[in-house]
Length: 78
View 1 (tube, one colour):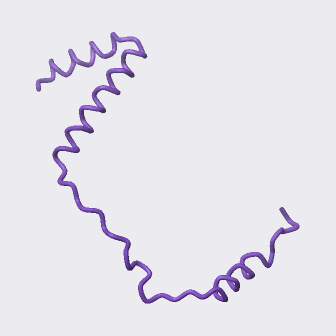
View 2 (cartoon, rainbow, N blue to C red):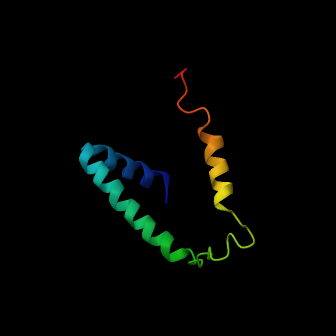
């Protein structure tokens, strides 16, 4: 694309109303999204199964953390 073509496109864009400019940008964005979706290979999502394997959290652990978080609640200085 030459500089003259870019200048012409810019001039046409500036001649549009704000609403028309927004609509044009939305249309172009949709086209770009479609093209990107076609170009990028779809990666399989990583399974979260087994994420916490080997971790054991007891109810006592949860209660202890809750007590620790709530010991200064509500604060008087706020």
